Amino acid sequence: MQTFINNVIKGFFSKPCKEHHVLSLLKMVDTYRRDLKRSVFDSTMEYTIALATITDHFLQITCDYIDEGNQTYVERDNGLIINQYNGDQYSVKKLLTEVDEELSLLYAKEVCVELQKSSRCLPDVIELIDMMNGDRHLYFPSKDGSDQSDFIYYSRPLVEKEINRICS
Image 1 (spheres, rainbow, N blue to C red):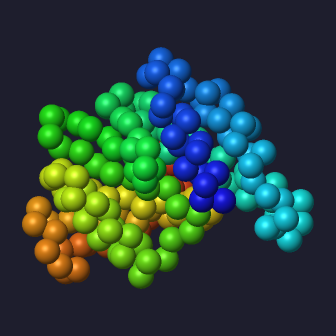
Image 2 (cartoon, rainbow, N blue to C red; image 1 turned 90 degrees about the horizontal axis):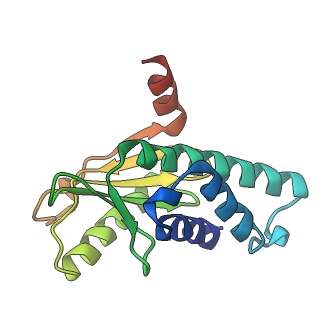
């Protein structure tokens, strides 16, 4: 499932900006869904629900990027979505099949280590998104990234963000 998520995101963001639209995303989902093994699901219904849930979350996340219009790209080796804005400032997103608080902290620290190895400054925010239930886990690393206490954990569902956007 994680490979499916990574392939859709890489495929979508590898297209020219003028092709970043909902139909393009749905084509990517259709293309890569064939790689999902139905045998890992207990039933066809479970497969269909999982695919629909992930597709819905893809649509919410990518529509944010389309609306913002910032320079966005995906790093090929790790599937991180880099969203550049205001010169050197940037955020990092990673879409994961499932995220729990403990593992997400480890993953956020790993992202910082990888970025520091590639001689990058740390992002303003690292956002890990649980594609099955829509939770967003936000981490705000300190600029030195020295220890675990530098991370602030915050989680909110994608649905809450959508409701706030529609109502405002």
